Image (cartoon, rainbow, N blue to C red; front, side, top):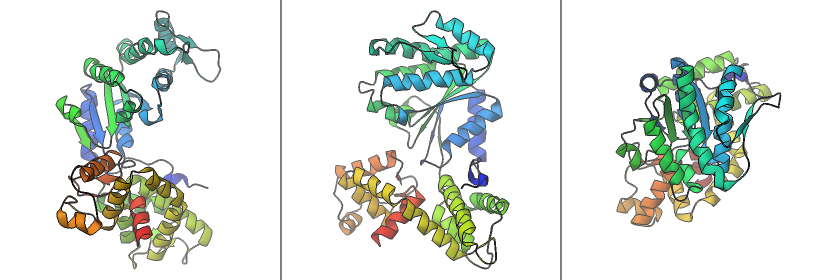
Amino acid sequence: MLNQSFASLPLIGRTAELKQVCNLLRQDSDFMVTGAPGIGRRTLIRSAAQQVGARILEIDCLRCRNGGQFLRFLADGLTEIFAPPQELALIQQWSLEKPLTLDQSLAAKARLVWPTAPSKEWALFESLLALPQQMAEQLDCQVVVVFHNFPHIRSWDRQGKWETYLREEIQRQSRVSYALIATVAEPWVYASQLPVIQLPPLSDEELAPWIVTTLDAAGLEFDQESQALALFLSYVQGHVKDTSTLAQRLWLDHQAFTPHPPGLIQAHHVHRAMMTLVQDMDITFESLLLLLPPTQARVLESLALDPTDSPQASAYIKKHQLSRGGGLQGALNSLEQKGLIYGPKSGYRIALPLLDFWLKHRLN
């Protein structure tokens, strides 16, 4: 049972970032948005696209295990954002000269189809990637193509051919804005002068009004005589997704236990909700640790217990029995790229509050 108050997260705060992204879209510019998973990167781009009236096509590269799947997601995204009959007719006309066809036999929706032949994938890739620009020109509209987890393309594009062509197309197309989403920006992003919008955690001042209002709409309020709200904010650490998840659990607990007086959240309710939440995620977090190389798992546990600005310091290495030199730095870089920790700009610490709480509780 879910409460719809928490089902769809709005854009919270981010006024300056929203203005920046809207300006970039109005200029048909490309850009990258970085930050921890669940911090609001996609919500920011969707909000900006809606504000400027652009159509948005999203592809999660993490879900693509090969070039064929990438093409499938791209093709399905195109028929979704150009779904009206008159627009599908343009795609139908375009497809006559391409190695694919528009199948409209299904009542549910039209779909671009092609013979399964790996040797034809590159020609399909070039054709499909050019289609958004062509449609935008014909319809006099703007298109935003969002690549989520963009670096993951390298898991199957081992020679970098597809990624290189994508980067060139990003620079070339004028009516399509490419928005890349990643945890951190790599050197090539800055070398290409691609604007980077980094999303840090929200401040308590930005987050508190939303959570108070949202819980109020669900019939709950924080007890002003306790530290319930302060404890809640300390647990979620400005992380939007975990804020919503903990709020949902508070609501579920209220349905199950009915605090007294009804609807009043006290500090122990917040703590109980956090404890049961991370207990439910125990297997997930245990699996995550097991999948990490031992060096990275050790660094992650050390940062959970002891966040620091200088994990490379001799005293810190000795205290937590970490490896020295390149092994430590490699582990830090990898954990940051995976979105599990914040790097030097924010101080080395766990980026996911629920994981952070679970690790502390497990290690203590």
